[in-house]
Each structure stands twice: as structure tokens, then as C-alpha cells.
Image (tube, rainbow, N blue to C red; front, side):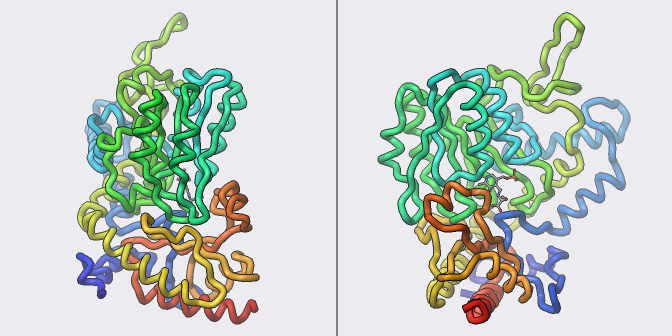
Length: 411
Ligand code: C6P
């Protein structure tokens, strides 16, 4: 399959990413660390520069023109984010610093108000530390219990075991949509529906899924959904927490300060309307404004087209890497986002990562902030190549060749 048959010309897309013109150690950069953070197209960089060059002002406060322009741009990102994930109302879109802050917001507000001694919180073996540690902190404070959904050897959650864990003490299920370490996509609709039947809420960690899959939080019927802009071609330091309006209304605020209040006196403070009740202080205006350019960038290619292209890379790369002696892919299942995570017999992932970097190839190595998953798989880490809309089959050929060379050197 060539680039044009998958719905867009990948070489035209590549031209929009300045960093892809770089050379590393005399070799053209092959960037396969997209699950950590994706590179940024010129439109996103331009949106940042435009904000600071032309209409930098604080939002929701001033009545002068710059303040009005900045506020309008900031709020138009909220509408773009709403549409991007299929939420019903902008009141349900809270800007955060990213997925990690989104999850911490939920544990600190909803969690503190609703979790009691003996209550149960379900997560899965696949979780990123961001979706483990905040729940552990809450459980410790409240005397609650964390239950963990086991996985198969291939990294798929065991739904039968999950159904057995659900009971009247289960208050919330918090689960990753697509695993960052393996790429495996969880059957979140089934997870959500089963939790709701027992009266529990569901939080989805969408850090890895939002850039690759069509997200419709209304159809999913999840209660919370968090993602980060920087994994979807947008700036770092900003993200979104979606939550159902009625849940947000009943939740106490997260941070106290300006913007999240209606009236303040020394006797009593009343809180602002949604979503501002959860956005204390001057937010990250520039990056939020530029996040809209990232949504538009993805929409302009079409998520379906990107998915087809990335699937092609995933299948092509999986076949190629599988056939290299000593390479074992972890999480080689049907329902995946474009992540290939592998171990190599008798070679430490870090050594491999260094030798690949010497060849201009950026991959991530280690436990990928999923230590319990690595413990479960009985490995010390993996080498992870993760693909984006701008990657090509030729780059995967380079990875395969580079890998063979590295293995020879390290054997
Ligand atoms: N995973 C990776 O290389 P933040 O840092 O808040 O934007 O995202 C945290 C996070 C939460 N959940 C999942 C599934 C994630 O993949 C991540 C970030 C990166 O895999 C950095 S560790």
C-alpha cells in the first residue's frame, strides 16, 4: 500500500512538521516516540506565536479588545474540544494541565466527597501510574480498597474477572482506553455498561486513545474522560477533563482562587458556574488556544484516514519486527492503536534504545510508567515504537534494519 492509497499524502503532511527536517547524528530523524508526545505541525506553532504576538491578555476579566479576543479564542477551543469528543455541552469541558491533572481532579473532588471506608475502586493491570497512584492516595486517605482487573498474556483485560469484581461496594471503575505500553484497546463500552448496572461510575483515561480513535463520550456514556493535548499534535501543559454535567454540579471545586468564584466575602463564598468552578486562577491561555489548531489539524486530514494509515504502519511494522530473530512483541492483538512494544532475548531495552538513537531513531524504552504491568508480564521493560500520522513505511524499514544492526552489536 503506498501513501496515497490510505487517504492522504503522508509526504505532504510531513512538510508541515518542522522538526521532521532535522538530522540526528548525521541521519534523518525517525521519530517513533509519539505515545510519549507527538511532534507539532506549523499551524500549532503559529497559533502560539500569533497569540503572544497579537492578542495576549488575561481572559474572562478585561473589557478591553485584547481581553475579549483572548477570551473568545480560549472559549472557542472549548467548543472545538466538545465537538472533538462528542460531549453534549461546553459546561462539561474543563481545561486541565493534562490527563494526570484530570485524574487527580476527580480523585480529589468527586473521590473525597464520595469514597468512604470499605468502598471499592476498580482499575486494571494495564494502567499508567497516573491512573493508579491518585486512586491509591485516595484509598489510603479514606480506607477504601483498590481492586485490579487481571489481563491475559497478550495484555487484554479479562472481562469475566472484571464482572466478578463488580459489586455493591464498587463506587468507581477507572480504566485506560488504550494502553500506552502495549497499544491494546480496552472494550470500554462493555466496561462502562457493566459498571453502570451495579451503580458505579466510570472514568476513562483517554491519553492514548483520543488521537487515534473516534471518541464519543455521549455514546460511550462514561462519567469522566481525560486526555492531554500534547499527544494529539497540540502543545504541552494543557488537556481536557470531560465529566457529565450533573456529576460536576454535585462535585466540590478542586483549587480555590480567582475565576472559580461568584461572590467572595469573609463569611461565605459562592462558586462559579460550570465549567469555571474547576478552573481557578489564570489558566494556560496560549497553549489552550493552540490546542484548537491541533484539533483542526487532525480534522483536516480526517481521523478515519489517519487511523487507516496508522493501521497500515502497525501491520507492516508488526510483520517486519516479528520476523527478526529474538524479537518478541508484547500485546500483539487485533484491537490496537499504533504501538509496537517488544523485548529482545538477552538484551536490555535501554541498550537497544541507545543504539537506535545513534542511528537517528527515537523510541522509548523502559517501563513506560506502567511498572505493575511490567511486573505482571515478568519483564523489566520494553522497547516501544509508536506511530503518528506523519510516519512512513520507509521509516519502519529503517527501524527494522537498525534493530538488526543493534542486536548484532549487542549479542
Ligand atoms: N504516557 C508515555 O510515554 P500526561 O503526562 O498527564 O500528559 O499523561 C499521563 C498519561 C496517562 N495515561 C496514559 C495511558 C498515558 O500514556 C500517559 C502518558 C506517556 O506513555 C508518558 S509516561
